[in-house]
Image 1 (cartoon, helix red, strand yellow):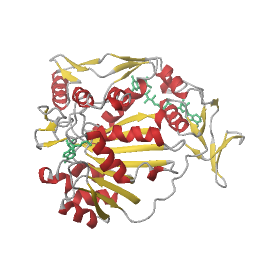
Image 2: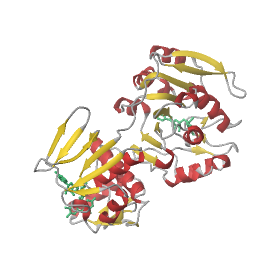
Image 3: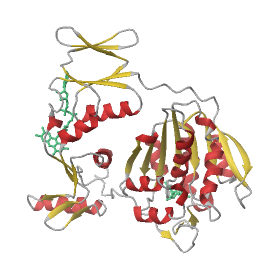
Image 4: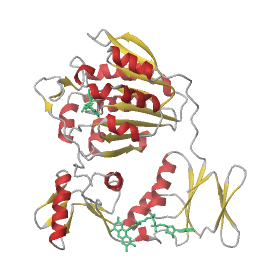
Amino acid sequence: MTEESLVCEPARLDWSEPSGPRAADYGDVYFSAEDGLEETRAVFLAGCGLPEAWQGRRHFVVGELGFGTGLSALALWQLWRETRPSGAWLDFVSVEKHPLSRDEAVRAFAAWPDLEPLTTRLLAQWPSRQKGVHRLVFSEDGFAITVVHDAVELALADMDFRADAWFLDGFAPAKNDAMWSQDVLDEVGRLSASGARVGTFTVAGHVRRGLQAAGFEVVKRPGFGRKRERLEAVFPGTPAATMPPPRKVAIIGAGIAGASLARAFAGRGSEVVVFDAAGPAGGASGAPAGLLTPRLERADRPHVRATLAAFDYARRCYEDFDGFYPGGVVRLAKDEREAQRFAGIAALMDERVEWDGAVLQMHAAARIEPARIVAQMLGDVPVHEARVASIAETDGDVQLADADGETLCRADCIV
Ligand SMILES: Cc1cc2nc3c(=O)[nH]c(=O)nc-3n(C[C@H](O)[C@H](O)[C@H](O)COP(=O)(O)OP(=O)(O)OC[C@H]3O[C@@H](n4cnc5c(N)ncnc54)[C@H](O)[C@@H]3O)c2cc1C
Ligand SMILES: C[S@@+](CC[C@H](N)C(=O)[O-])C[C@H]1O[C@@H](n2cnc3c(N)ncnc32)[C@H](O)[C@@H]1O
């Protein structure tokens, strides 16, 4: 069991320059003092051939090293809203070792009034410092941010996705070797789709050679503002056509799992139909009352990170619905042994979990009305009361039948 903290070390910011924050531990700025937003647009958006590269695509993935203030995410999101192909989805996947607090992000965003209302929407979902995956979904815009709180040199090896574009935005290589090592650049290559593009502000020789060794073709381009040069790189191959989402999806089970899936598929334009033997609210999720609490353990292990990530994600989802009552939950220790365990857990967490000697206070936890939330998640997705007894694959689709062999539905995909 590791006794390592479950939260990242916070960023240590120096605000002495009016143009924006500087990282005290790295001696470098988060964005250019000249015009950070314009530089982001030139180096990363234009550098990766955006928005042209996502025209005609149903799904596009942008990877980033160094989430920082979230300025690149905001600039990308703004461009996506202006030029998004109809019905398409953009996933932005970033990694950050020293997350900023929400208050620090508010302060940094004050410089970008043009990015409203996106800054407000991002701040409403601003992730905690918890290690691991944080997923922020903005369905109305077909946009999701997945930010992994960890060091890139640890995080990338466990990740599996294919980026169509990369923003390499660690601090200057001379000030932050770890972000630009050959191992990291090789992971960038492994996680790249055919034809992926890379944009970065640095032209350091070892970064150029490192990207080449990772399989990229690299070219220097004129830099932004007073910087002479920047880099663009392209992974070999041509971008593959993206698969459209399934036309029709059948889901068995109208509990929280089925309702979450129904919402996600419907949000991507699929026709969804749900079957439940007990009807809506018939299973465990039909309870009138429940608690949304993190499942805590005194260890930084993968399953603990996963359940904490799920807790944060559930909170963000439920906040949109009636039947969600934030305000915290307390847990009483039943004996001295449990008191010690709770004290140990609180020591690994941030201020959202506190041990006061008698109770474990989980400030971010909530009371919920599961049946109400599930009903709202399902929205107008039809729920048929029927027990699915068999599933058969036919030419190109799937067929569901009841115990009498009567066909209930045919669909392209079943969950
Ligand atoms: C008493 C109790 C208290 C709990 N309290 C909490 C709590 O406070 N907080 C918390 O987070 N969790 C709590 N849980 C756990 C939580 O309720 C479950 O983890 C969660 O509801 C599971 O959701 P689900 O969608 O996976 O399954 P369910 O909600 O059980 O949904 C599965 C659905 O599938 C349907 N189904 C199954 N087979 C078929 C078939 N062949 N054809 C058609 N339909 C089918 C069932 O009828 C059912 O409606 C509690 C559980 C129980 C039992
Ligand atoms: C130049 S800033 C990124 C700016 C950011 N893209 C923005 O829009 O504000 C570099 C970021 O990389 C992060 N970082 C530095 N070293 C890291 C590492 N080894 N792993 C992950 N993140 C790291 C820093 O904490 C910082 O947030």
